Length: 593
Image (cartoon, rainbow, N blue to C red; front, side, top):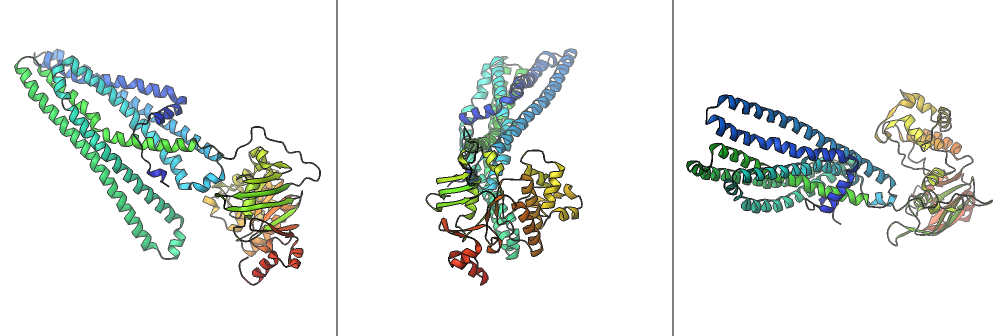
């Protein structure tokens, strides 16, 4: 499959430009203000060569020094006005671009929050960050350095052509005689520059992918002494990127030099033809000087065309990726008429009814899986790796939808619940505890799900989770700042805070995905004690990778080949001598379960 980061489309795509225009609806006054400034800037700028003509023909050649002073003051006024208008123009364009970028980033992030877990399984985090950061920045460049600059250049070019034809159409045609050659050269370099720029993006994508992987796996690189190998690979990828950049620079420089050369040829033709006109008294000296300046202004935007073309090409490719992401509808949404659970007497809290599920195609993880959890019952699920234990948790809170069958919570199919209410009802504590950068208090009150959490509720949750001693050891207590993924805490400490957060969340149904694994003995004791308090009076499904953690469960389900193979208490399953007993024997022998 082709990498989206290597896609490079046209520099001007009408459909994408229309979409970008729609994104500016909230800022159209700023956009229109920018557009209105372009003719004003062009008028002031193009008045300067004509003032030069008047100064030469009407004053310098006639030795009219007082009149020359008036023209000089007027020329100075146009300079001041030009610099002032340019400053306002740059400010308004940047303001427009930044506001559009801010709004677009917020839109993309809000959309990502609504997408389903399957989407994130297939889209690496680095690529999504590129959409939100780099691609939106490219769209900003389209406003500030691309589209607006091109519109301004078109307005200036139109004014130059009109003034030159009005002043002397013969001299104008001498200048325009170079245009066909210029068009051929620009087309040649445009195609070559596009191919070179595609290579640059490909090399950059490879370099970014390697860098992200290397930094994420730095501990493993150092453990296996692969520093020299990684250094050589990075040097090779960096060299490829540098060469690709040099290649694109050659074409941009070639276009720039070609336009400069053609501009010089046009100036030489003007001087040759204009000198003859001055001798024949058909052209004034001032008109020739003005024409030379207008010719410079004619070739200036064309000379910078390569850079603007690259900016627009990058912006169109980025826009296509952004709008492709925004057009992807969430696969899991709240139904138009959600059902409010009204469980009948004796109805189980949780029921898996003939559930079939596959992450990809017909590679079934669960096959006709059926089981129930009664209110306040503690049920554990065990089984070999890949049997679908964690998948059950993901189906229960509707991170994924079943392929066949039903998952019911309080007698209602999870697909008929309002999504937010369902996830308030079913809480998950995962093996890999995720705490966010920020204060301890902010992480714990995140369990409030948007409702206000009182200080009493927070302190009670901390006490029940056995996290109070931990909070007291922190220099700032609840105000202690946690680093990225709470790396400044041990795994056991993170688990205690996760349990406290779950207590604040207070779900009716709790799913524990081996929440006590990978902790030391002392921490495990505290976590197990906090777990018992968390589970009290609550319907609980424990996903176990270590059989020692499930022996106190009311029932144990043994998953095998995607369905419930055995069920019963720990003692019953051991006496039965089936699959669970064999798992237990492997653990006692020191083999993996």
